[in-house]
Length: 146
Image 1 (tube, helix red, strand yellow):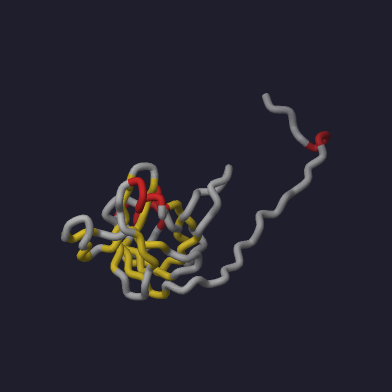
Image 2 (cartoon, rainbow, N blue to C red):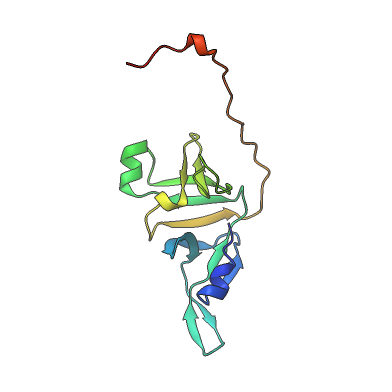
């Protein structure tokens, strides 16, 4: 996930995630992004402290602080180790998201603004995502809908 366009459109600095980065979820325009929790100095056009949008590689491991709504709805712990998954924005896909050890996958847009995470391993990992199995059903086997 990397929205380099934010650098040009909104003049927001962008950088690659690093191990031990502390991140915070934010909704910027139509994008849901992780940003650095700590502000960093930016010199131009004038000196100021800014947050940077962080680019995550598919397979990066995060310690995600889960809000109460997801804890109750999905039986999650307060802090969960998740894997960042980068999905193409196609029909039936959530877009970029996180996968829990239970297999539950949620899109970043489902995380509340202000949700925090710590990068445990920023390196891209090759993850195997099983393809959904297709089942063929003959037309005559379908029951009529009443």
